[in-house]
Image: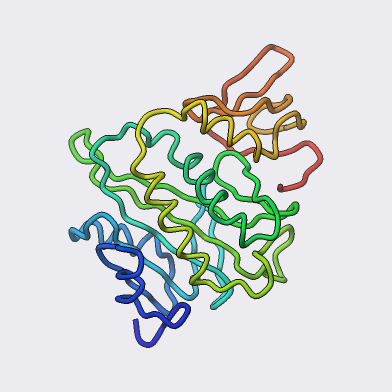
Length: 250
């Protein structure tokens, strides 16, 4: 872990500031998600945060990989151990909603949401979320919640966005972690209030989509499905990626 710090704080100070069980702060790793699974398998308690200044093999949905430049964002995975699996089906959406709301004042604009796991800002991707659960005997043993957030938009990535100029990584972290923990603690499907708040940030509503099915996006359901109006009628999509007909990413 060396002398890596975020906003002048080392790993122990970050854990204390956020009320976490523990924190690891690394210089450069392949993937914080992989480190989190390793730590959880060795018994790391809920509320253990794995942070890296840079990643060489960050993981996304569908096995996608990317590099995360040093000092330009927050590359993190949080370990949680939910008492019940109720809520896991909508956890990515709930996370996106609460994190977006927490980041508005650092973004200089309203943070928008793209099903199932992207945060968008001014037409570019601001952050991505990845949730992976590990089970034992039909019981969820732990959940690893990965989040990659651009503080500064990478110049070599098309359609990327960053927070307002001068935003401190620690300020973003102080907002993200409580929002993440609150989402992880919630159970059950999305509530009517959550669905209403999500709808005000949903970039897909009434847009033509070509994946996961061809049609017009019509919002999300309480169980996390993307609703699409197709020529054959309404379809609830529970997996896949959302691709717009015009080819834009956000």
